[in-house]
Picture 1: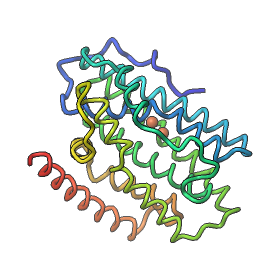
Picture 2: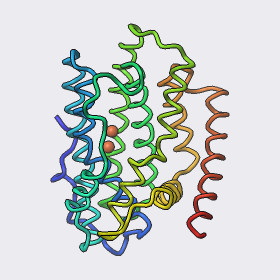
Picture 3: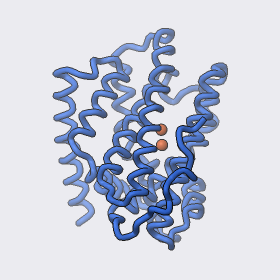
Length: 273
Ligand SMILES: [Fe+2]
Ligand SMILES: [Fe+2]
C-alpha cells in the first residue's frame, strides 16, 4: 500500500502566481531520476535474488519512487505547460543506464548496497524537505512533504535490511564509511547531471556534464539550510553505525555545511564564467 496517491494531491489548488521559477528546473530534473526507480528495482532484484522479502520490499519501494517522478512531472507540466514530461523521460531512459545485468552489488556486498541506498534516501529526504520548506506554491509544498515522508520511510526500510545483512557479512566500520562517502560523492556523476540535461535542455542540444552538474548542484544546494544538513548527517552516522547525535556528528554537520557553501560558491562562479 502506498502512503498517498497522486489523485489525492489537491491539484486544483495550484497557484501559478506563487511558483518560484528557480524551482521548476530542479523539479523537472528530479522527476527524471525518480521515474527511473523501476530500473533500480530490477538491479536490486538481481543483487538480492534469493531474498524474497527484500525483493518484494524493493518492488514496492520502486512503485513509490515512480509515483514521486509522476507527481513532480505533473507539477512541472502545470508550472510550464510547454514541457513534455514523457518525452523528457524517454530521452533520459535512452541515455542513462544502470548496470541491470549485475549478479552482485557494485558496492562489493549486500550490506554495502544497502548502506549506499541509505545514503540516497538521506539525500532525497533532506532535499525534498528543503524544497518543500522553500516552496510557496501550495501544491508543490504538499508534494514535497509527501515525498520527503516516503524518503524517510525508505531510509528506515534499507537501514533495517542493512542491519540484518551486517550481522551476517560483518563489514568493518572503515569499509562502511568508505562506501557511504563514495556514494555521497557520486551525486556529481551522470545520474543527476544528465537528468538536469534531459529535463531542461532543448531537444538536440549536446549533453555537457560539467555545466549540467554545476547548474544542478548550484540550484539544488541554494535551498538547503543548516538544519537539513544536520539531520542528514545524523542519518549518515546512523547508517554507518556511529552515534547519530553527539560531538562528532555535530562537528561533521558543521564541516559539511561549510563544504556545501564553498562548493556552491565554486559552482556558481563556474556557471557565471
Ligand atoms: Fe523518491
Ligand atoms: Fe526514496
